[in-house]
Image (cartoon, rainbow, N blue to C red):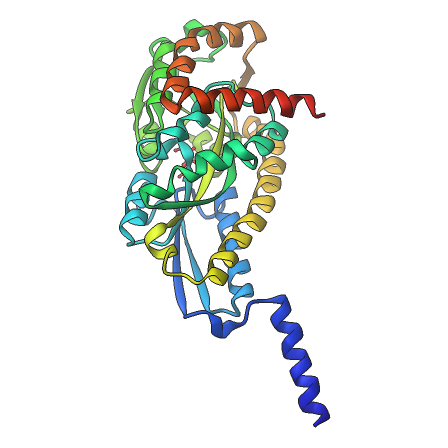
Amino acid sequence: MRIKFALGALAVLMAAGTVQAQDFKPRIVRFGYGLVDDSNQGRAVRLFAKEVEKATGGKMRVRAIGNASLGSDTQMQQALIGGAQEMMVGSTATLVGIAPQMALWDTPFLINNTREADALLDGPVGDKVRATLEPKGIVGLVYWENGFRNLTNNKHPVTKLEDMNGIKLRVMQNNVFLDSFKALGANAVPLPFSELFTALETKAVDGQENPFNTVVSSKFYEVQKYLTITNHVYSPWMVSVSKKWWDGLSKDEQKVLLDAAKTARDFERKDTRDEATKALADLKAKGMQVNELSAAEAGRMRDKLTQVNATVASNVGLDLWKQTQDELVKIRAAK
Ligand code: TK8
């Protein structure tokens, strides 16, 4: 009698902490991503997997599948829409073909620091942009950090605007990036990330732009000599779910995924920032020649991009554009 009662009380206690396993059908979640396993992306997906398994008592199993083994970002997005794959994480920039408002995050020099990034992405503007995915067949859960993007190339150091001339530069499959780098004078070529290392190695392209973390994890330092600190745009990642699959989950299951994505987000942002602060020294030690763009030259680049900003504003809608600017003013004032 006593033992029975104690066991009952224990079960109630356990049920309060985790969702009961029998509420969940056994499920396999294929979670794809483009970077290597040993990257900020890979580490966060594995943490997400652990959180989900813990919360469901192992009834949901997340398979972390990196290296673009399930396809490039755009291929995985189509698999999510079709229901052939459950989850992925990748750059918001490659989602613009599906949800045009995502182009907001491609605006050069929109966000100045990580405090602004977190407040904007996790606030009403971020929510509004994220919500535009759902009618297209993708549920965006949360934003993770890709980071501030910097330029690498194999031709010469980029110290001034004119140095962009003649650099064959890989950009993401996204018109804002294409137009931005064309406006700066580079020969911009859109390529999926999964083809980038080989393109650099075979000199099909001279350069690329990505956060320090990715230059480290993808070993771009092996095939790139010059790194210019430009911080030209803050790049988010979107944790995405197939809506077809999501709609078949219970409310409890959906909550488990959302909570785990948030826990992994907090871990991932910290991990990414810690790694980024060490990456520069790492890359120098590996032989990269690093220079920081002067404020004057950054200003000249910004001037060249005025038209790109105007195009983004009209593509995402002037209301959203204005809300973003207002929100940034608020964030900057609230120190
Ligand atoms: C990884 C990509 C990558 C992005 C790119 O799948 O393509 O350059 O920065 O992070 O989403």
